[in-house]
Length: 360
Ligand code: SF4
Image (tube, rainbow, N blue to C red; front, side):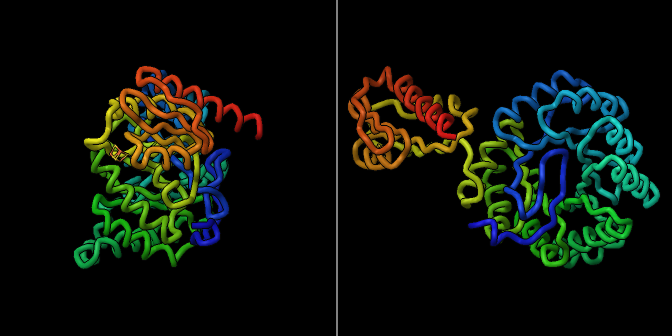
């Protein structure tokens, strides 16, 4: 899908990162470390940055975390978003301590006067605010609507908050509508999409472990992106944060929205496979994680579909008996013994990456 089919949204800035329909869909994640431990938090942020994450959110549950944010934001390679609940004063501290964005749920942050103080300071510091509506904490007066339709209640809550922020002349805003139910989440974003030009942060909350979280996120985020809805995404998994990034890029790649890093084409293997393919694919996957250049790498079990896929890819192997055929840019290079396949494959991948860099 081309960018022209994306829902038109205005551009907002989180530090140097621009978000909106005039820009590629931005990939973000959240640290799982205790933010008060700035060393561990920065270590995770650097890991995320190396995997291609573009924005990072950290939890700021108390004053100590808001203080630690200063060191984190100062050394972070990514703009840092502070995630704040219940106490608007923490949001003010986070802004003063270098957060490029903050995420709040205006419904639980301490009343309209607190929200107004956040707006004023965010304006002064040029900080972006995400209005994070969550199905678990909707306003009491929306209970009736919620019983009829959770999606409508979430959209109504977002519109209400948007009115407050935009009424105060604040437009450096994003909105998210999160529920653990995929279809309610999708419906809520669809309902809101036609009623504001505010960029959307997409995610399915509490999505689950690597498998269930990946599936739910791919469905929820994927359906919306396919419809042109969504400007930044976070895949949430109960797993180390770095695991979220390849999933996010696979979703974007599958929809033709971004093409970053190595795409691995591998077969499921079957009774014809005569090399130990699974550990080989896993080793390749780990080894290519930090590569940014878009490359297609095929790791195939046998000569049925192997040579075809390997020829189509930038680099590929097709397994044989205790050996594999190595291909690069459509040409068969040589036959490699199984024990040397990973070295040969990685050598070719590095060569392609080097060529790409020289050409750019
Ligand atoms: S490429 Fe070969 S080993 Fe892999 S699934 Fe197909 S037939 Fe089986």
